[in-house]
Length: 226
Image (cartoon, rainbow, N blue to C red; front, side):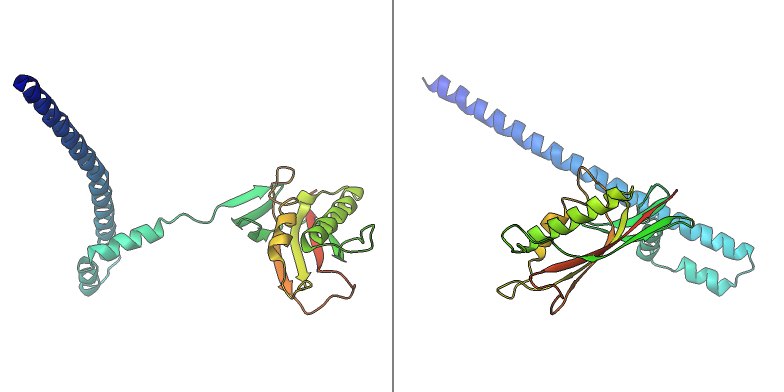
């Protein structure tokens, strides 16, 4: 019996040693990429400093200017390199129309090329339901965009041609503006499976709308390149 206990103890110690070695290996492996990345940034920064010095000397720059570059902290040089190499905003160009700054619900910038056709639709709201009510913010938003879709398709256009949406909304019965309800219905028409494109968008809360019962009035602008 004592021999068996000794064997078990040795086995446990061996297993613990294996675990320690494994953890050390993992830690050592995780450090290597960090050191490599730092060295790469350091080399890049120093290389940039050398290039600046050579260019200024070739262009007749003063010795004071060259010395100022030599004395620049490495961290500042590396930061300058990282800033200069930062990726520019990704532009999406479809049908000759360029879109930038994509968010969940809209783009921040849309550039329209010369010669494009433009279609404006006046501000509109929800159609009255069978029971005479207008419905919630979500229902009114869905109804308004569905009406726009019908109008656009009748003119040979589509929802993907919309490049701008302006919405003017009021608070509901309890003095709360249902912005989430608006967005839920909005996402059914933009950034969806049927229409992956999005417009630029403005959403403004106002005191009231002309039509009684309306919670939101929307106007749109559509563009396409012949």
